[in-house]
Image 1 (cartoon, rainbow, N blue to C red):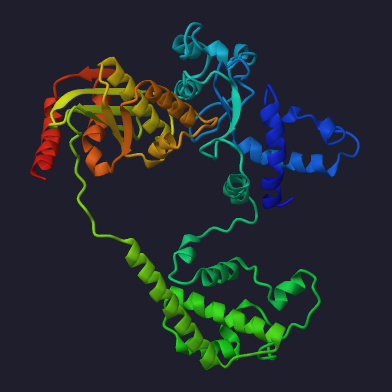
Image 2 (image 1 turned 90 degrees about the vertical axis):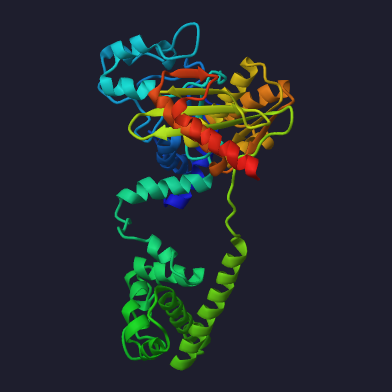
Length: 471
């Protein structure tokens, strides 16, 4: 079964997997598809789904709710770029534990002392870096490759290409992006890719695949037809090259023109002169380049300096941002409240030792900012974030199984109670103060609340206010 078929068939075990309480791939109901896969002659449907299990095992992860249904050593539930399973070996006593056994009894947080006593140092670090979202109550299998954490054939195929093909005999090392960045039409880049991968149906290739055919080139009818002959040694191709400049995009377009002429001769018995091929290639590439350049120019606008803007009278503006410092393993949040005159009202920073995605971090930062505004009794607040994905998810009230959308749900719940809480997307240049505070939070305690501007960062805030005042 090839990788496209595997990604398609993975849809069926994914649906059954989501319905199971324990979520184990091996415990899918084989009776539905006929027979036990271990004995007898299993049905084609079951064999196909069983082959597709490899994709699911690479992309599935448990979302932690109560933790009762997640086995510590037998299920994938860790976060981060490394393996989602707790590494073995571990002390014998942990193999029968569920994730619930590692949490505090009265609230959803890791029992740090217990985790450190039970696991090795590396495993302890991975476990404590796995975030816990308090609003998620139910354990559920999710698909890590999609933002809504539901399986799709597209993401399944990408995963197969990334992990499976990357380690088998079909993988070819090289800078393949150089082909796709060539300034040429997509059909020319695609042909160049097929040529480099050796998958053009030349007559030599067809004979290798046991297709009986005449080996002579149908254009010149002199030599054996392979890739080198078609594009370089054939008299028509050799003469066509004299009409073109030596750039990657033009060469790609030239190869496409030669290949098109070759197929036109093969199927329609129509062949063009080398001069005509070269001239057609030159004109086609120039036409494409002019249109492409015109589209690129129309999509670009003159750069505009983006500045922070004061809120309306009676409103407070809150800028939020998140920072990820490489090597520290921390997710840091910075929050800054200012009034309609640009004066600093309050600020807050917080960091946590967990591994989460950037969009989850942005959502967590905004949620903390809203909780801080509620704590301070602020009722008319405009929140600004430089995460367009987050702001769109809030405006569209998206729902889903992921940790990100669970945090979005918590944000929407607060906004339903505070009707004068607004969220707005702002470019990073206008969100610099919050970003500076987020990066600085690593120098302070885990949670830091202040009403006076920290001296070392007052210049950034004052510069923002002065630039806004001059407008």
